[in-house]
Length: 96
Image 1 (tube, rainbow, N blue to C red):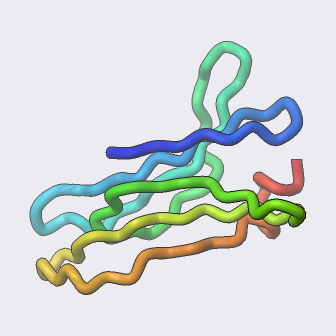
Image 2 (tube, rainbow, N blue to C red):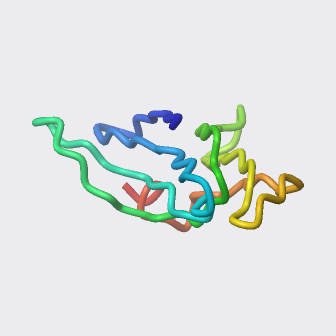
């Protein structure tokens, strides 16, 4: 499992890559918010395939924030899996 964090204003976000297990690699990775007491709340599930890493990316000079997920394997054992780049502009994350 891998994770990355991001602060937008006074809100802390945590993205967690869920690799899954043999035959159950197609699962959800998640984005959480964390409050002042360190309580985590799921704000979005992301369908992934054996996710091995996750990173927030904020291109210089742009207001967009992206989440990059490295997928590794599907339930059938195939490893030619595309990774995902998702713009979070339309998600609650960027509206805070």
